[in-house]
Length: 63
Length: 413
Image 1: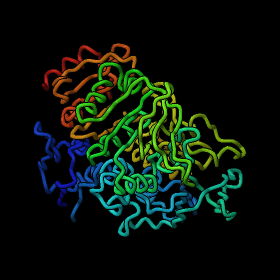
Image 2 (image 1 turned 60 degrees about the horizontal axis):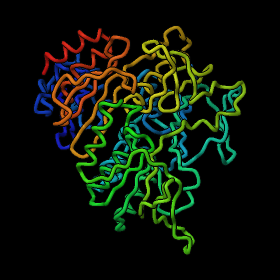
Image 3 (image 1 turned 120 degrees about the vertical axis):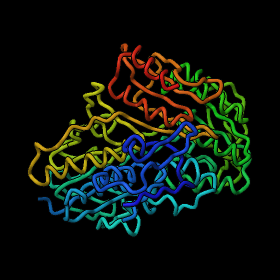
């Protein structure tokens, strides 16, 4: 599973960071960083929740 | 197992209920009815990107309504439900047709309040639906220069910011002396008004609107201004009324046995409103154990979470395992974008809360403030501090003692 963020859409609401801090991190510069672009299957549910709750629909899962 | 589930409301709560039902294994008929004829859309951009003209309308289609969503929904868009025949488990549409269901999701949302008597004038709008947004945007693109926003709520403040950024002269009229006092309190509320003022918006507080001035020589009666109680008139070619919303419960009033209608559809803690009926989103009011009161929340995130939860509760009943229905009790979270600022709030804030700025300062408009109640942290508010709001939302979730919360927040500064 590969996590893709459309950074043109991302507004750093940090909802994804609240759901999966092991994958998503908004830093002090207010930008989102992906800590792990290929999270394991055990994180799929959290990744799908992050997709659903992103206010900008900026996150996609490939594979 | 139910054979069919009807969902009234094709917005965020309704479509997330649909997706939740399908994820849970419901493979019967799913019928979604909504009076709005538009392809289901996301609402936050209506006061921001779509109104600004920077996004086309097709960019805000909700995921559940996209061609690849694969939810197997029978769409009944542009159809208004006239009545819920709850004893017979049927919906009667305004056109007379009846839709039978085994399970029902009430997610009809809320509608914007219009200033009494103002709806008859051209150029006076609310901003709630896509049609409202397109009408306001068309007016802006038609060369309107003088905009008046009635009501300094979040929608009004966002619309004012967007119109100002489009180059309009913008005035906000607000009856309260302190802006956002009811939602944000006396310390933070004025910061919103200061932000608008610094961007050239004329924010007038403590003013009472008397009515709309219009050119009555033409049939459309286009608005020319807003008349205040002191007799003065603020010129306007475009008036946006942002004085709140009311839950859309009219179609439920006659149902027998009756649903509990009290500022929305009142549900139990699992979101069940009646046998086989759940409610979610802006229309639903449920007993929150966390806060010890009935809550009705109009936030975007709540519509998603509540729709999903209502879907799970309904599925538990559909599969004859009602004891599996869980209680719904999240911490509210919302955001608002105005000019270059992003405000986010986790938990609750209000006029009677204690307030402490723990990171940054009000002057730089980049800060975190904690809201306290009964000696405990109740809310975490950030301005351009998304990281810290997310890191600190646990303080509001756990309602940690006030002094501990303040100390823990300051450690992050």
